[in-house]
Length: 224
Image 1: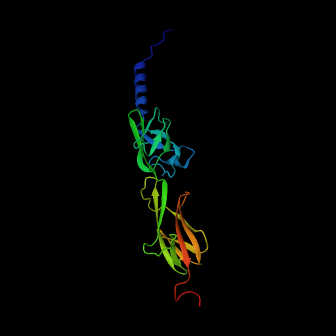
Image 2: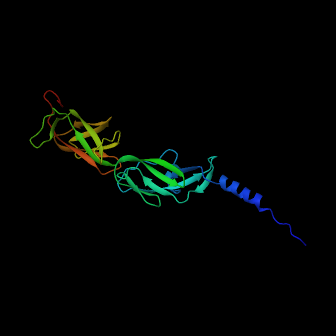
Image 3: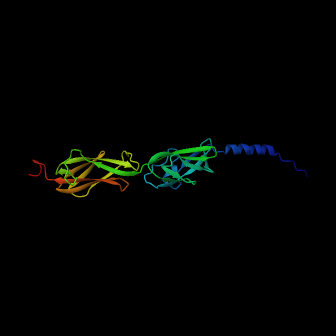
């Protein structure tokens, strides 16, 4: 019995076509599969709020029809501004300071980028009325029943203003109360004594303080 020789050329050609079809056309950076950040990659990464915060990233490959092909191979990582964050060979981000930059992932001839932002609270500043009378100890005098407005600023660890950061207000004693308002705290004198008004950046232990001394009712006011 004679065997006919197999024609390898067409098969080899088909293999080359399939190999070309399986070549990735796009890379996307994403967070770990087990985290809420797993869906990120098209719209960027979450905003980081703490120095030393870490997040493990991964890279997915897609074909020219935007179909998922699996994890990208031989990924090389980088961060454009290394004063904001560093990234390891395995894709582990470590936050160093506030700022905006981009994470870059390269595999073969393909490249993917994802915007990275860190906003780390560094200081909370409080300021009262410039013309408010002061005690010799440096406290602001506040008559009972009267109010003053305290302005608050939240700065990041580079001294830049963080707009819209939520504030938690409190008074250390019953002598004064504080009510939050848009971008400020309204302090009211309630009883003769001292109070410290505290403004804390929500989600942190960083706060600013303002001292008031509540005095008696102004002339012509108060209970009769």
